Image (spheres, rainbow, N blue to C red):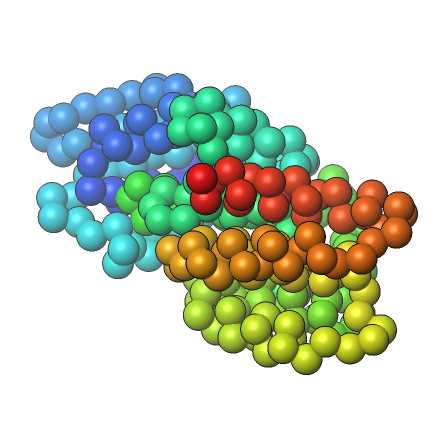
Length: 239
């Protein structure tokens, strides 16, 4: 047999909260019932998700997760981010729900990925489909790039933000003359993002301020453009 379809069934405390949040991301409701058990089906193009409600469920303790493979993670992330900006005035980067940024994952052979953490505490892990991107990103080189790659695995894949912070703080505390300025900007931006996830607005503000003092050539400024875009979103979230 071929052409089977698998649809994840994920827990939540409130299917109404789930419907509201995923509506922001462009999902429509395909099915919803209250009895005999509350559940809902959602769809966005070929992406299907289903949720069931559990009385007294604590999203902070959820182990719910699924993988989504797509041919264009950047476009899907842009669409989700646009929905968040329209509904909330900003991209949600802290608390629950929230969304991480597309970044290459060394634990996924260099393929890019980002995560949506929904109101049920479920991690929807979006990855570039390897079949549509046969050449993964090269392995990181340089101490800052390696520190950033390790931190991304810990925070974005495993949810261990605290350990990711320790790795980045150690790298930033020992600047070296041959550090790549673009990577330095990327590290500072990611450290600010992690600070936001920890509700540490003071550190997030400090990191974004430090970015302004990194000397960049015109070419380096162009290479750092995606990081500056993230920094702008973080600054908006701090207002």
